[in-house]
Length: 316
Image (cartoon, rainbow, N blue to C red; front, side, top):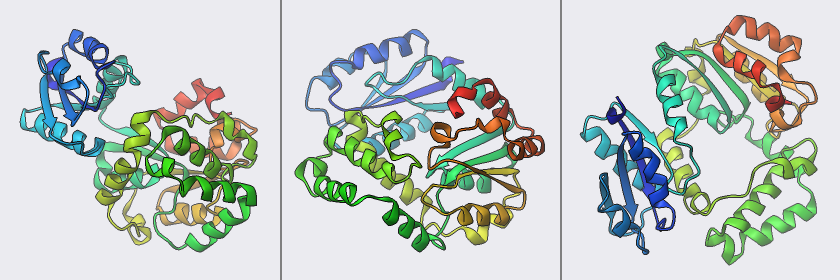
């Protein structure tokens, strides 16, 4: 069955690690599609002789384009499953079998956070028959009704020192060059205002890998383009999936936005937590022990919630 699993790797200047990343994939019998995105080192010379499908862009087009090239090739060769995998070794091969097993379920529960809300709602709209429940944690707004209020809350939460440092970093050459250390610091300063206790930003994993710093904005742009103009309030009434919205009361979007979201979804429920944008980091009481959450859990009856019970420290 592994041959029906196509593993797509976008590769750019990974000569030092690409062979070690490919070895366990080949050992497990996966069909590997490596897309060299215009590397200037010896990456192409290393992957070309290997028993894989090697594709090459003549110039660097970005991770999104490399993934699209690999996915198109896999679909043209009758792939049953397609898995994205990074050539820098940051993903574990064993995760592929976990994902494949999950794909065998008739229906799934989708848990999203922040911007992922838009992907979750779109999935629910397109594939309702495949969805058992939807959990939206600290959602972004699926529109712009609360945009002014969210912007005002952000300006009020950001300190003058943080605002000045953000201006300095984002106007510099390192930011334009997508320097990983500079972008990591921009994220830290940006997320400080989204936390109830800004000092806890140090507990977030925000040290970007070079590949993420280089391609992250391109991937975000591709996701945005695929979603189109987001103004979905009038579409939400068609989503019949049981939906739980978790909102930190100190997050930048107001509680009223999440309350409106819960009311717009026919089977939506809202639980408000004492946190900012990252309730699994900040909330002082584990989510699964809060009575409103338990009430909603009974109505959803979905497997993902049992996983939360098994790992309470991840949500403390």
